[in-house]
Image 1: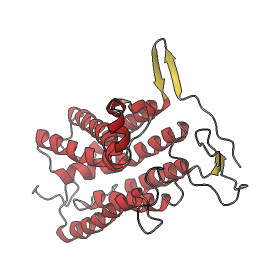
Image 2 (image 1 turned 90 degrees about the vertical axis):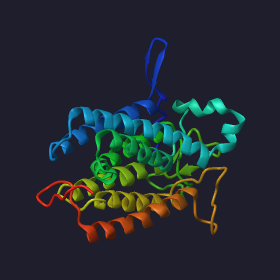
Image 3 (image 1 turned 90 degrees about the horizontal axis):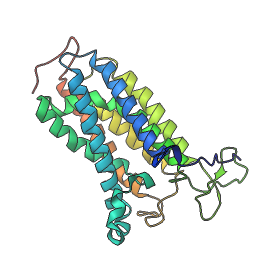
Image 4 (image 1 turned 180 degrees about the horizontal axis):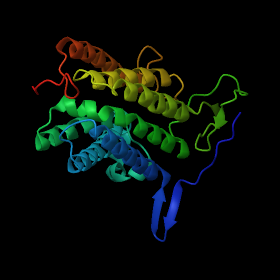
Amino acid sequence: MLTYPNIDPIALSLGPVKVHWYGLMYLLAFLCAWGLASYRAKQRDHWSSEMLSDLIFYGAMGVILGGRIGYVLFYEFDKFIADPIWLFKIWTGGMSFHGGFLGVMIAMLFWCYKYKKTWFETLDFIAPCVPTGLMFGRLGNFIGGELYGRPVTDPNFALGMIFPTDPLQLVRHPSQIYQALCEGLLLFIIIWWFSSKPRPRMAVSAVFLIGYGCARFFMEFFREPDADQGFILLGWVTKGQLLSLPMILIGLWMIWYAYQKKIFDWGPQKNSSI
């Protein structure tokens, strides 16, 4: 069994200003996304530094607003009704990937309108930059001791640990680390490799949807369901799994459609925009 590294949630104190690890992980996520996007922009025409800066800004707003609002609507609506101000206390934790995903989708519509880019061209461009952000987010969950895993069946399980925030003090899976590796690092490697060559429009976005949806669905078997949600279907399906299924199905349709149409936004096969 491993010992949980009881890390102070405050990473840095500068007088009255306190920098939380949770916020620092988000900063690292956005900086990493900006670096990866800058590298990808060199492979394409007509992607200026101003466009990239705005792209990251719009994406960040979509993640933060969508992630927080999604968490409230999907998981903690009763808590919001009891204390509406809690919605703005992002540093205390509580973000939903699915809400952040929808937030980014909406934010990209505004960015595309401003820069006259097609929606799926933009989504294909940013999709490979997302998994590293997910990895940092899960590391933030781990440091905060939130969203921990289910109890292990064997108390001597090598990776099991007791989280100080767990009221039951059971030996649990460090599911945040599992998710950081699977939904973050592994998914990044797959999508980065897939997008390293010109692919039909929608194909890269489709691989992200399928990859994340499958990874999240599988990881939910190790993650403790939210106390107020539990299993919502068939006695074993969680809210996270239910929200991931549409992503997988839509992704499968998208990749079929992409290779039927074969519209390319960059590379020697580049087609005119539609």
